[in-house]
Amino acid sequence: MHSTSGPLSGVKRLPESGGMPDRAETTSPDAVETIRAINQRLFDTSLDLIVVVDRRGKFLRVSPSSLTILNHRPEEMIGRSGIDLIYAEDLERTREEMRLARRGLLTRNFDCRYVHKDGHPVSLNWTGIWIAEQEQHFFIGRDMTDRLKLEGQLRHAQKMESIGQLTGGIAHDFNNLLTVISGTSEILAEATSDPRLRSLASTIREAADHGAQLTQRMLAFARKQPLQSRDFDLNDVVRRTAEALKRMIREDISLSCVLADDLATAFADPSQVEDALLNLVVNARDAMPKGGRLLIETANVHLDERYASENAEVTPGDYAAVMVTDSGTGMPAEVIERAFEPFFTTKEVGQGTGLGLSMVYGFMKQSRGHIKIYSEFGHGTSIKLYFPCGGDALAAANAATDGAEMHAATSGTILVVEDSSAVRKVVCEMLDSLGYKIVEAEDGISALSILRSDQPIDLLFTDMILPKGMTGAVLLREARKLRPGLRAVFTSGYSEHFIKGREEVDANVPLLSKPYRKQQLAEMLSKALS
Image (cartoon, rainbow, N blue to C red; front, side):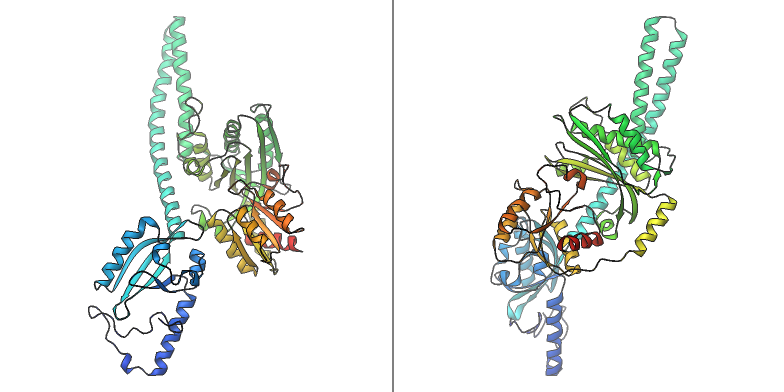
């Protein structure tokens, strides 16, 4: 197919079965050229991936959207076989779809994953047309990544809701049994003068009391515990709780608090907040068997529409937040996925019930708040609790947000180093809309390779925790050996106070904590570049 033609130009007739009648012969040459120009425009601007392949599966034409979806430029794909890019597990199914299309089916929809340039599979839903006269396949592939992510979040939320209903029902019935056991033990104790029987009755009652505490946690997860929510000073609760916590942690763990001066009033049950902090600190302590750092912070946080779109249960708005961060063992992704499930624990038998985090999760949901885990295996964990703002504080925060203006964009080229492809995609979209030129890297080694080239780079924007054994701080040191004076901004799911406490981090480099708003990103980069 000629490069100057549209994606469907040259098609004289669709298959007889189900095809539309050919009117090309009655169409004027000018009209044909107009149609071709429109087709070309659609091809060049499509957000979906459009490819034309021959009967052997070799790419003849590829739309520019391939760069956004797969990070492959069209010219890198043209002439190659689709086998090179199709995810191995989907290859046979895709071949069968192409065979079916050649047997006379006009269009078919099927799913086939392609391999992104960084190696991860990209889910695409394809609509295919076989152009018999030219022996070519014309395919349109829609990127399903965001949709599948949202569907996964919905399924997870539904699973947690189902577990909550089941847990709440069990806890309710179990409480009835415990009431009988506890009451009967008291009656037995009163009815006997035998010291041995009195001791046995007391043991039964203590066990029932312990069971009642467990069911209370189960009810907390099921969001059926009675709450006494009100406006309160989150800083005051953290101060009081921190004093009590000092007696619970070992001497080889240093505990510090960093409290926001202008923290908004929070709306929740203060006593349950204390219990939540207690659970988080106990977990953090157990994750640092050889000692470490424990940091509790408060901050005003705005969760915007973009963050809410990635976390389906979140309502966009302003929150009073408290973060508990440790320098412990961290959690792998599969543990984070199940961390809030009741009775799930990675601790040894007898060292935990698996109800601590599930209780905190249920409390936050019942309080219309949000809880988020950020953890890097081997580097520690940060758990963030976002509480709705109280009445007066919420009105003031909304007024301040409404009056805020987006910081003006500054020109320049930013090297974005982020191992999460989803996060990297969002950051690059933000930077592109601000007017910056973008160069991407998934790890420190790739970033250094770029810095050794002639590619102009004005600023390094890097995550602190990177794969292949190189942190953002180490990357910056190596980068400045290649380009002295290179400006930089760190980013991390850990807080600035926690990251800057590490000896290897340059305290003069600003850090932007995740999640952040586009306005915060713009202001941080503008300051760093100026």
